[in-house]
Image (cartoon, rainbow, N blue to C red; front, side):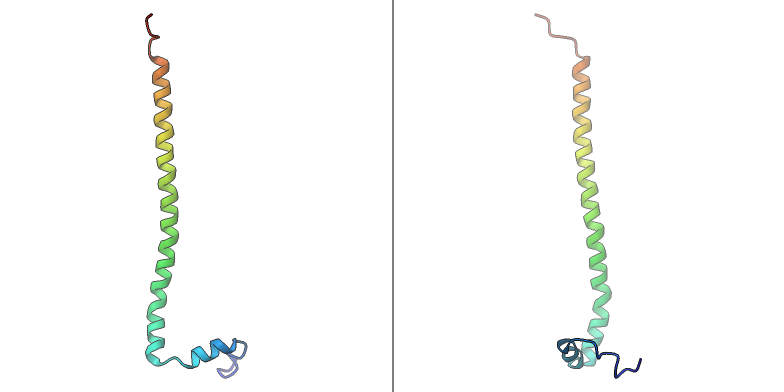
Length: 80
């Protein structure tokens, strides 16, 4: 496809935006895209780390409660 017809299917607002970009703007956008991708990727990793931390915390609480119940079973009954 030729460069002239390549952007024909874009909305008018997008065409105006792209035609108004200076060479410095395109450099900035090209440099900023990897940073944005890294931020999005880090957000996904952070989400799963938070979910895992909450799961581990909940598991520790449930394990501690179960250990306390088992220790309560092993205690001798109170003497009247």
